[in-house]
Length: 436
Image 1 (tube, rainbow, N blue to C red):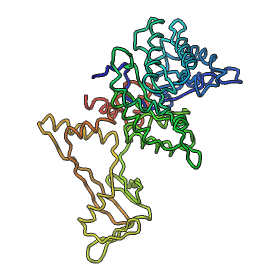
Image 2 (image 1 turned 90 degrees about the vertical axis):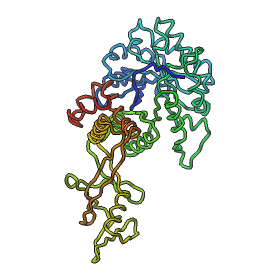
Image 3 (image 1 turned 90 degrees about the horizontal axis):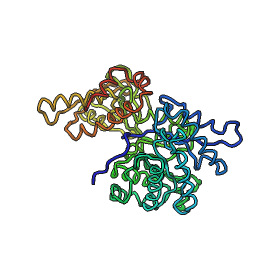
Image 4 (image 1 turned 180 degrees about the vertical axis):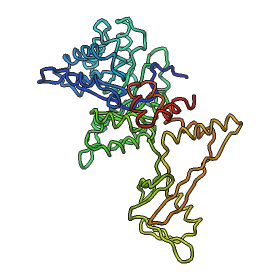
């Protein structure tokens, strides 16, 4: 069954939540107003005025009013999509009804916000029958406000085992005439409440990694043509940890992540994009270290865990992690090839794709591409190179970072200037055209 998607974005990098009403402030909507005026790399792909966990229960009625006011004033100019989070709970009919009333009020086009709202985020969902209840409420909202069915997208937060199991049935349920689940947009992990639902414990009281949950959400999104987003990373000062979390996620197909501050938004917006310059890595003790770039085509290792020297009989002694090997020149080359890896820049990826496209036009089904550099360790230099066969499958795999870049460029014109400052106008132009 082919699912007809109801939205334009193929990638979402950032899911940024803002309290809808702050108690004790002269302007309870001040955080909403601040978020609505973010631009460029500090503005998220998806902005979530959060009328659930981020807003005190006593302030949620005012929070709905604030969403309507702020989105009416600033929504048209906001560069990302706007998806308010409403209250919901799989086990509580009263909470679900309150969520329906919030969606109904926010989506009312007569109040000015409805035209700017792209959809809603539904938390605390259970199995797929519960997802269908939220979908039916949205269908009623659309009908009562004269909106086209499916015009409001729905994103759900996977915060329970029941919701996680529901991911396995999602593909077969979408597209049935008895529901409008084709409106689904994001599948978002909520590890905190998931931990509570699973009654999980750790010695420190911290959250488990929940790698299986992230994998299952990413797999469910891929199977159903949706977009997967990881949950919040609470230590907002731990930029390195945030970046490592995103690297792990991208390796399993999850590009997006929850952002709690504009600073996290900027980090998460930039992280999935290809690097400005390529770099060579050296594997030392299971850790990949970036080699210093002395000059074009010349990279230097200056640590103490790897050493290299020559011997009187024209062999080399290579020591890695305390283990010394005596190697011939050819054996050393092979060993260093095994220990090194290259991270291509945006320009590198575009070059390779263009070269393969030209070869394909010339009637070639596969070509070899060579990548090389000179590695210097303890003053000893060794030239290394590798050949990689490119065929159509390799080309398609290489397209993913380019498709991400093109998606960002198309939907976030407010980031064009920063992208051109980072990569150069020529590289950006080529990156937007390659593969088309």
